[in-house]
Length: 115
Image (cartoon, rainbow, N blue to C red; front, side):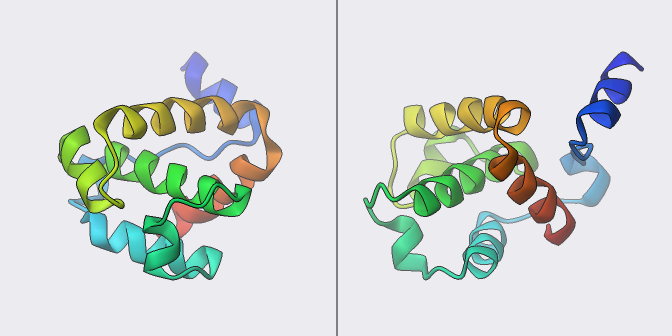
C-alpha cells in the first residue's frame, strides 16, 4: 500500500505487470517506441549516443525486460545486438530516471498508455 501512495505522490503511473495485459513481443515494443520518438529501426539499433536515441533505447530495454519473459541476452540481441549487461544497465538507469528525471518520467508515462 505504501508503494501505491508513493507512486501517486510522485505522479509516476503504476506499471502494469506482464500477466495483467498478456504477452508483449519485443518487436511490438520496438515499433511503438520508434513511432513515439519518430525514429527509424536503424536509428534505435545504431550506436549513436544522442540523448533522444539513448532514452529511446533504454526505454525499449526497460519495457522489454518488464513486459516479456525473454532473457537479457535475447532482449539485447533483438535491440541492436547489445550485450546483456547493457540491457541490465538500461533497466536500472530508467528505474532511477523515472524518479529523478522529469523528461524520462513523462516519456515513460506516455509509453505505458501506448503499450
